[in-house]
Picture (tube, rainbow, N blue to C red):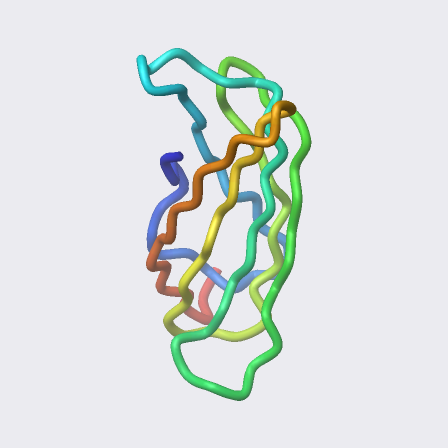
Length: 98
């Protein structure tokens, strides 16, 4: 799992995170289900949840709405139809600009 979107994002409402999913040999995976959880690095904020259930050439576009500027950790779990899964975490800095 690779986050292709910039790791610095603007909090301008709705965003789209771009992720690439490949198998162990580097071949694109299109039939995974992605579950994303965005957590602020400090306590007290409600997590942001998002999902995607198909990709094209391993590329998944996931609508994602940042609720506050600051530092976030985005956890991504990719699950294949056979139940196998992999999870990665990404640090993202969100600013209040556009």
